[in-house]
Length: 139
Image (cartoon, rainbow, N blue to C red):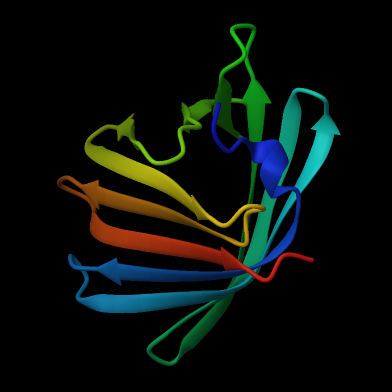
């Protein structure tokens, strides 16, 4: 069956690196990601931190939900309920968001999991970046 969101419950140290080729800049985020049981078939995934680049620094946050569907597959949803992508560790997932397109991947290491990474590549007329989020040091 593979790694499910239930295997990642806890609070993790989070680092994002965003390589924005369109803007020619790098942005870094340091913070935490917390995955918690919202109910048996729903995991709340909240992230918060500080984004820094050049001489700027701003707080950032988002909340996602990973929901088990009636066919037992896990699906990532935005906080407002819109579908984001299927949860599929080790495989590329797609998120069309016209006019741009996103390809993402979740990878995990360890048994039990001691590190997991989410990578997104966005291409299109408005976006051209690669974002890598690394989760370590579960508490």
